[in-house]
Image 1 (tube, one colour):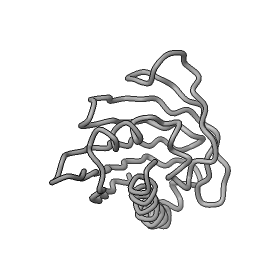
Image 2 (tube, helix red, strand yellow):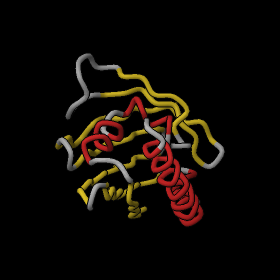
Image 3 (cartoon, one colour):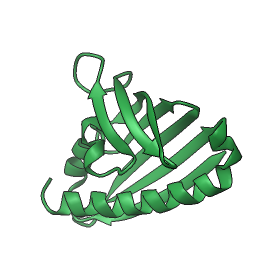
Image 4 (cartoon, one colour):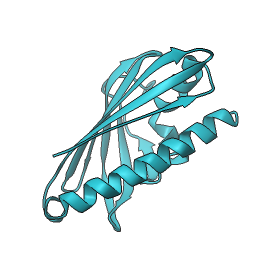
Length: 145
């Protein structure tokens, strides 16, 4: 089981940060594991909305499905990703700090197959990747995305 926590401060109002991170269509702009993402259920993004994903993990291309699991405007959004032998849950929590936003991410994963065999290595790679992704998210949002 992978269980990792990350957080950063972003110099943008919580409403702006939530609007950006709660829409999976923006994931490829800041998450290096996301190659492409396409909404497959109609309507606005909310709990139950599904997306077809193409991603990369440990040098392997993975196709899967992402579903919005939590959607609480300006405070929390959550996603479940099922891609190949991997299931991951991501919860993003936001709160106002001064004029900016503290964003926290909890990632939990249950690797199987080849990913289970390399769970220790994978945990380190996910940690490193997400630290880089959070730095990119901060940069993208603070530059006016």
